[in-house]
Length: 338
Image (cartoon, rainbow, N blue to C red; front, side):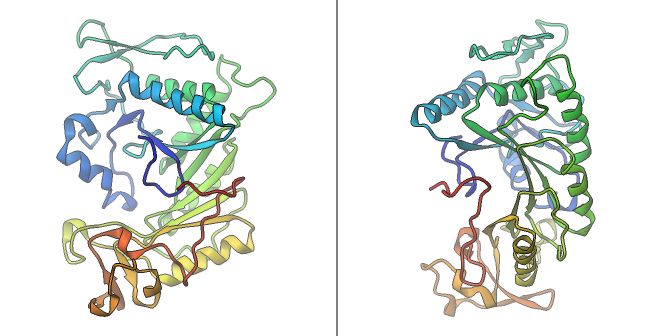
C-alpha cells in the first residue's frame, strides 16, 4: 500500500497476511479483527490457519517505489508485514488469494536484474509449494535490490529473528561484500510490558542499520528502560473499538505517566522518540491532544483502573500530543511523512 496511514512510514508492504497470537500485545490486534471480516484475502489467524502471499504485481510495486525514490534522490521508509509477523515459525504451505501455490525456486540467483524470485503455479501442479521460509527469503531479496528504500521489520518473536538473520548473514550468498549488515534494514521489537523488556537484549545483538523499539500498545509502565544499542523508540496507546467493559475487546488505556517516563528515558539516553498516538482512551489531563473537532467539554470522563479517560470511538480524535507537544523524531531524518 502506498501512502500508508502509519505516521512514521511512507509505505506498507505485506509479503503475506495471516499470523498467530503470541503475547498480551496481540489481544486486540487490528489485523486479526480485519482478517475475520475477509479471511480469503487477509488470512485465517492461528497456527492452523492460512497465510496469503502478496500477488506478483504487489512485489513489483515495491520496486517501483524504489525507482521513484531513486529518481527523486530521496529515501523512503517501508513498514513490512503490518498484517503478519515476518519471523513467525509457521509450517504450512502459503498460497495466493486464488489458492495457487508459489513455486519454490531453490538456489535462485540474487541480483539487481529486477526479476522476481518466484512464479505462481496452480494448486496441485507441483509436488510442494514454496514455504513461508521461501517467501521470507524473497522478502530479503527485495530489501537487497531496493536500496533507496529503508525496510522496517517489527516482531515479538525476536529469538526467531535472531536465528534467521544469523543464518541469512552467514549463508552461501555474499550479499554485501565487506559487511554483515544490509544498510537499509531496520529491525524492531515490540515491547508492551515489563515481561517483554527481555526482547531488547536479543534485538541489540542482531546486525541492523537501525534498531528500534515499539512500545505499542503500551499496556504497562516501562520506566527505566535500558535502551543501550537502540536508536529509536515508538510509543503508542492501544486501539480497541469495543467498550472498555467488553471482555472480548477490553480497552487497556495507556497512562500519561508511562508515556512521559518513556519520553524522559529516551532523552536521557539520547534515543529518538516518536509519540504515535493515545489510542481510543485519552487521559483527562491530556485533553489538549483532542482533535479540534471534538468539544471535550461535552465528553463524560470514564473511570478505568481508578483513572479517568475520555474514550472515543475514533483513535485519531485523541490526537498525538504529549503534554501539548508533538514528538516525531526519526533516526537519520529531519522530515516526517505527510
